[in-house]
Length: 104
Image (cartoon, helix red, strand yellow):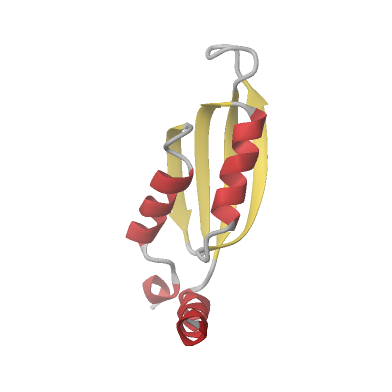
């Protein structure tokens, strides 16, 4: 039953591919219930902001919380970021899709 309440894992991987991977190196991600922890590196603070914006534009995401730490391995302007993502519940996604379908 809990699995039915969570967001489809393949949709999450597609979201990471489209929002994060073109810009950053994905170091790790894990999903537990309605939360995903995403860690990536080799990005500037501006790029982190762009990634957050892309994630928050997705109907899969209800909110994000970002932590960053600087790293010297990739250059002084590059950072490592960790984002805690609150995922939308499956019922909310289905309702949003139904609403979107009616509007088109």
